Length: 203
Ligand SMILES: [Zn+2]
Figure 1 (cartoon, protein in one colour):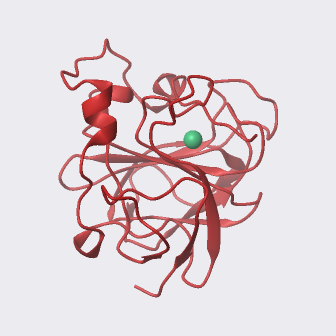
Figure 2: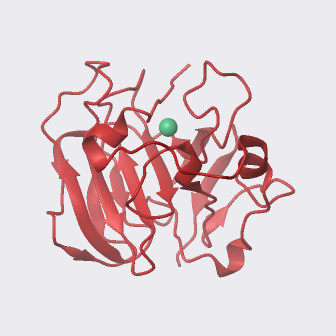
């Protein structure tokens, strides 16, 4: 099973403080997600492409990397295009790490801060795979980089996660996310369904 652990990402993505969250994991993981039709987010890959979302929000097995986290893993291959889901500012870029070294903290990544201060992380990009620099303003659909297999990963994929702000990048700060151009099934709470395939419609 391909897996992904992002606990180590606080070390590369920004400040790592003690969790301040007050919401329980059950409340966080079971909450109703926003209506996807009004979502500000696009799937992080080009229109016409489809990928399987093989690890979703809060799998109950603690051996899975997203246990307690709101996040998605899509099965992009090394070199596949990763697009910005929403406009914002590139506030962190890392691309020096090799693929497949399996070392937590070695996630090549691009982090985009949106105008409402939420932050979206795009993780496990390939070596020298970033296509934006810190300070770049991006639009939804801008090419951020090329997917890969860096850091805490057991196979090529793209991890995306949304955070409340740049204060903490921990489980408690992870936020529900869905996509207005996703063609695929939704759970009763509007979350994407682990194991399902999602196609990106032209936005
Ligand atoms: Zn992941």
